[in-house]
Length: 334
Length: 277
Ligand SMILES: Nc1ncnc2c1ncn2[C@@H]1O[C@H](COP(=O)(O)OP(=O)(O)O)[C@@H](O)[C@H]1O
Ligand SMILES: [Mg+2]
Image (cartoon, rainbow over all chains, first blue to last red; front, top):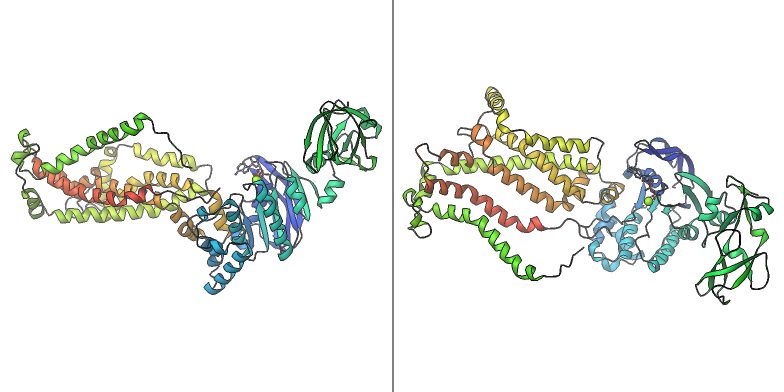
């Protein structure tokens, strides 16, 4: 089991409130991602769940037990840090075995578990090495191994992939997702990268300045963002959001249309513009269109085979059913 | 990160020369002292015998036979060892708490601790002498150990604090997640990671204890008297016996020099080996 409930949890550092009172339930077995811009309080929230940070107010329950005053080690949660936080003076074997040794587990059982974890993480050949002799990806695996052996109620990840290079990050992302499918243990994963959030999560919690902007499945956030912050944050390239006379025609203060929901033509369409930069990804091309009169730049995403030149006249037509409408407060209008 | 320094002309040639000059400059008085310790008191003051003279062991024999060198030496060892252990025993938890669980007062406490070193020792000479005598602690090992510990505690806590600060907080927190208690944290994580720093702190503390003269001379007579007291005792009123004094001094600094020599490697050993990033 591993159901985590936050009840009116808040946090202030000195007099500055970083997390206003907040309620959140994470169901057992769920892969929940906290996503938001840097400094919005994701790590603070995770660290409060871990017990590394005291709460200013509120209660945290793990499996209906109030753990607010319980020390980190007794909460049954395992954490993977962005910096890996391996013990540099211990071998990989000792690193992974450390939490078990602290539990005074029988040495035979420790060895069995360490070997099994190492095998599943492709670390068997590195057990006698020190962390300093490993690559970034391997260190990350050791950190995960150290979490796995404990068989925790839930895993907490704080931006675990942000120190890895892009290729490794994609691979590890997949591995962690697979690990979740295999173990079915609750995981809370913090990232500022909406792609990670979208690809891994069962449930995404979008945070801004300590406030939950929206909770939902990746597709739910993509299709029905509650406000223009979520609309702009989720999805890549970003949704085009503009106000003005065109928006008013849709009976909204703000109108949003995703780059992939705009049809492009060289001869006719609703909005006329001029091609600025075209980013060719191969499969797709992102075109930055200027002078539409809607906002400075409108981004559209088109098939990579279509070729356009800088300065060409271009016509855009939004897919009406894909238009997002928001009121003057930035809240979604259905 | 290793910094690659491009060897300049000065770096290749001037640096070793400079190092040697500085080294010799510092070494010369010690060298002179050792030489003088093998001269008779009469020869010691004659410039023509500066380097070439008839060596004698007279001073050393005199020292061990008439002055009970070994008692002073063992007192020095006992007080310095126990004072160092006690200082670390108090200093490690204190520095640990301040490095990893700082409160708003931590900075002020650190400054305040250092400020106690600014008080002139002479200012408390009378109360210290009076108090220790009336408490029956005068000239006891216990007193000297406590005094040496208290004198060195501020410096030791400061040094340990700076070493502990270099340990990434994440590692400490990871160990807390992994289920260590406070003592385990100190034993399993803190001490191994800061080992180089702790050893150099201990060594420095030991040297300070060994060399301390103000209080050891004034708060002892015979039972707990250290080598400092022995040197001081050879400062005879009728004039200085340089040969004898040099022998005593050589015998007093000898152990500490040897200790420093053996601990060299430990002192340069680094702190972390690439755990973070
Ligand atoms: N120990 C601390 N003392 C004071 N302020 C802090 C501390 N930790 C975090 N903060 C502040 O809390 C806010 C949220 O930080 P954090 O949770 O690390 O954000 P995130 O992980 O989303 O980037 C930031 O404004 C940060 O400056
Ligand atoms: Mg963070």
